[in-house]
Image 1 (cartoon, one colour):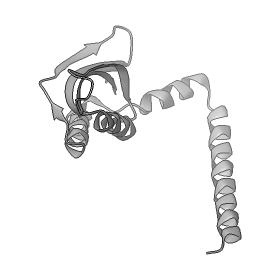
Image 2: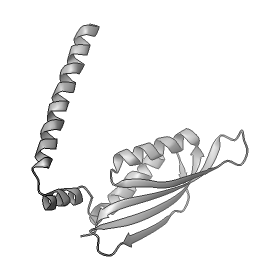
Image 3: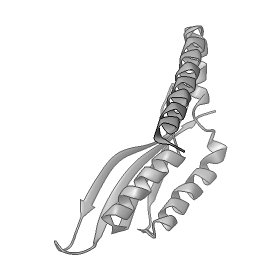
Image 4: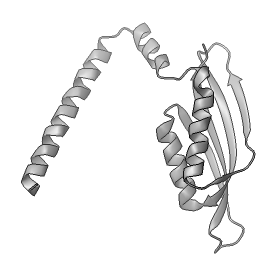
Length: 143
């Protein structure tokens, strides 16, 4: 396909996406505050999918051939909220790029997952592997 045709196709696709985005934005503007809040809470997965979410996290680590040592997990339910937070602390050992790709993949695969902190440690300057401690929070619907 010639360059001019590809550019035209890309422009047309961008126009369609822009129109869809505007229509979606207009629909959200018509919602009252209670409906907007309800829509916000619908974004978060229910607790029943916690096992599936953890499977995705471990699958992503396996794809990057990362060694996940024993992690720490804690479910925290804040009072007067409709969200629960599943705190995940993972010691990870592997290549720096593998760790970065793992983080990018799990944040993409699990939209309600947040990377809270990360700490890197390398025993020697030239060593190819790093020890990292990753702290995630997975937000879930409390109901």
